[in-house]
Image 1 (tube, rainbow, N blue to C red):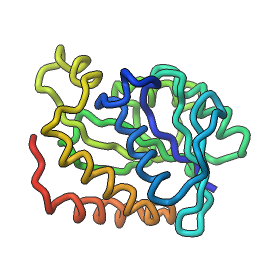
Image 2: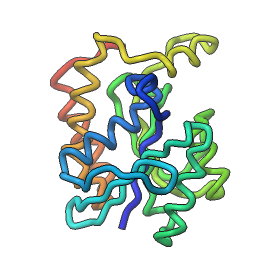
Image 3: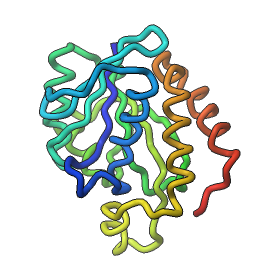
Image 4: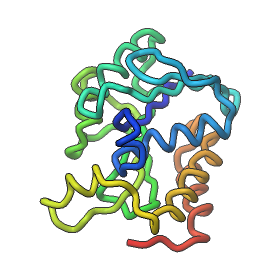
Length: 195
C-alpha cells in the first residue's frame, strides 16, 4: 500500500497557482487510473485506486500548505505506513519548468509543505516527487512567483507534464523511480519548454 500526497492550497482562488502543481499531478493520476471519487478524510480530499497492482491512497491536504503534515500524519498513522510508502508531489523552484526529479529523504529546502510533514512525521526517508516550476531569478520575487497563477504560455508544458506523470505512474507505484523519471522526460521532451 502506498500513500501519495499532493501539496497545494485549497479553494478556487489557489487552484491555478504554481504552488498547487502537487494537487494537479494527483488529480491527473486519479483521473487516468480511475480512482474512487474524492471525499473528505484526514483533513483533506482522499481517493483510492490501484496502479500496477498496488493499492494507492491519494491525499490532497486542505490544511493550507504550512500545515500539510497535520493531514499526512494521521493518514500515515491510520494505515501504519512506513516512510518509504509515502510519496509527496510538490512544486520545485530549483528545477526548470516541466522537469521532474524523484528523491528519497533530504531537507525541506525552504518548502513549507515539506517542512510541516517533517515536523509531524520527524524528518524521514519518504519520497519527494519534485515538479519543476522554475525560479523567477530574484529571491524577493519567489513568493509572488509561487503563489502566482500559471500563465497561458505555461499551459502547453504543464498539460504535457501532468499527462506524462499520470502515464508513468505505474513505474512509480512499482518503485522504479529512475524509469519513472526517464519516461516522464521522454514524454515531455517532444515539446520544448520555456525557461
